Length: 189
Image (cartoon, rainbow, N blue to C red; front, side):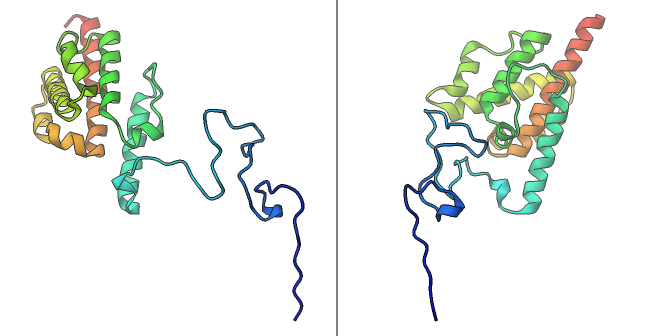
């Protein structure tokens, strides 16, 4: 039995033909990696927050359906923020707050309903309590605008903090309430 080996001369650049080695300084499309972002090693991926809905295909399908519904609804809204798939996979409470502020500025929805302290509490030292209070008050504002009392029972603040699907429902209800209040304001009814 004969065995032949190939020795690679020179630096190993990470290509398949050189047998692996260090990660390339170029991205797959041939551009330099930004200096603030270290190139990822072979077989490594950027870390993301863990998502409970990645556990199985059924949960993942449910989450992606919610993401698509939210993106479809917000597609017509000219927002300053990028409402990307990556952000919608987790729907941080700060995103909900920022969208509320943007709706409030553009449509007048919920203007003067929340104090600056309520809004700042989302990112304060006691963030969990602040987020809970903000979400509770936001649901109350949506309920008073839409008249749908069922929302306050379906969306308790504690559950909103832990359930990304429920936060998607809240985002869509926020959109509908803000748009309907803008229509009512324009028509004068």
